Length: 76
Image (cartoon, rainbow, N blue to C red; front, side, top):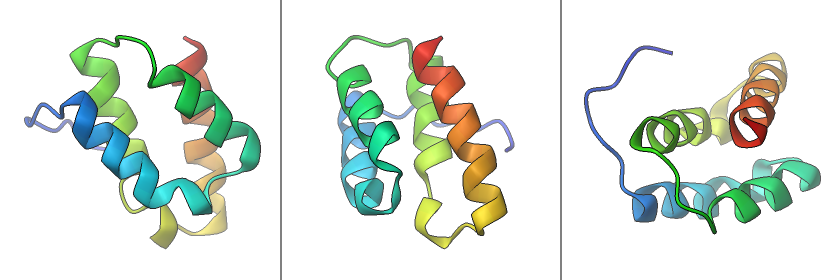
């Protein structure tokens, strides 16, 4: 995952989450939903956005790797 120079707003991340929600494991849905109720740094928002981006198109192996990164990110 390359470093993106675009700052994604909380709303951008929430919209991306809602679009990818049906593809995420149930446990992650709840954790991410809870995470998005709190204030987060711009860096965390950007990282979360990019982990969610095109999640539905990722291979199973890629999804497992993203799931680990998502868990680490939101449980910080």
